[in-house]
Picture: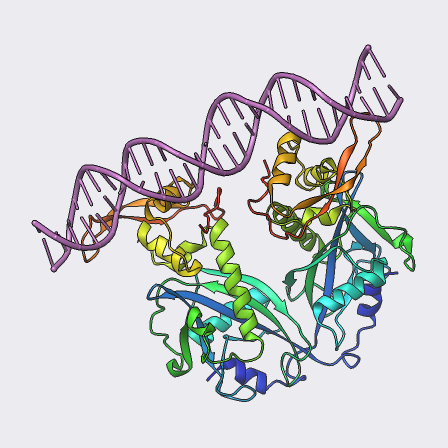
Length: 241
Length: 241
DNA sequence: GTAATAGTGTCTATAAGACAGTATCCG
DNA sequence: CGGATACTGTCTTATAGACACTATTAC
């Protein structure tokens, strides 16, 4: 006899304490060549004044993906991130001091600086450089959001290797050098420009050339502009170094 | 002002319908050179008589990892799988016809045939070959467990490439040929024996030789026995072909 | 002109994949 | 003995990484 069936059939809302299910989103973007995460400042206790990941309750008619999209839009004005992916669920019993809250965490990516977030209280929403967040003196995040954020960061770092996610962090069209800057910002390394170009162009369906070119201030010939190709999985993968 | 704070502070158990949180575990093992998943047969409606993944409710004092270990032990007698890892959370509103149930799914790996599962109703617990489960005529799984199982399978398949998880699917010590059979069973391919050996031995910390050897029936010199090394991440990764 | 960058050519070290061949065991 | 398997040697081909070089632009 399955315990699953047993416990489920005998479930009684009074038997177990109420469990709340939320979604929290770690949205990454690139600001001034450095990877940044979007945080909102809490206006109420607990952790009043502390910075936290955007998020909120799942509604009765929503699955977690829908709730994540809705919360992101409501809290930050970002209607459609270029990438949204479930990360992991955090369920430590005392992670919220008020009651049992299970959080389904998401990783999201959006290109460049988001436009002025209309309908949002700009004062309480900010992009934080992830390297600065690790420094001493940086604000501690509310709840276990520091852990969620660093898990999300690790996921993004490793997915850049074998997926085409890097193109979700820049506006299209882009130059190969701009794409390289994305990799360099996320991985915090320097990549060999000539070999990087060859590698990117050799991976089938990663980028496709457009007609346009772009000149950069400071010299150099105009660079060919590319847009993202159809490939989502890169094989062979990009190498961190 | 953060919606998160707003909704959370105004949370009232009566305002939202009760949400139940469960864990479900896809435990894989290898039986007769073929990858198999452990299923339990449901004794009550809904889906009475159907096969389902083992699982059950999270208790108030447990996080999901603890609950997954407990349920696995209670339902299948397996006290400590060699690997247990959170997969993904499934939250479609109507995935359980009785009430809102959010399931945190796990992937687990154990070597060889589990010993006779003491304390378990053997008649309602079975290992199913995953290739047979895909065939027409195979039983449909309860709830969305087919989807959970195939997501878990895909995760195991891809993690074999860049982690040392294959060693979790065989008893130690093992021969290189046995390790190769694991890869061949999970990936459903044939691998080149000589190159496989060289590759495995060249990856630092993947396997370490022991003093022992093992002779197989049917001929051939005794094969050197190895045990798992300290590496969890394989670099460079094993290639599917 | 000068500095900077885009893009190409090419050399070397390494690794994957294929195949041949030898040694050692079971029956 | 014959068949099967463990294990090694080696050849070919592909690729990563390094470096040199040319072309084209901003200033």
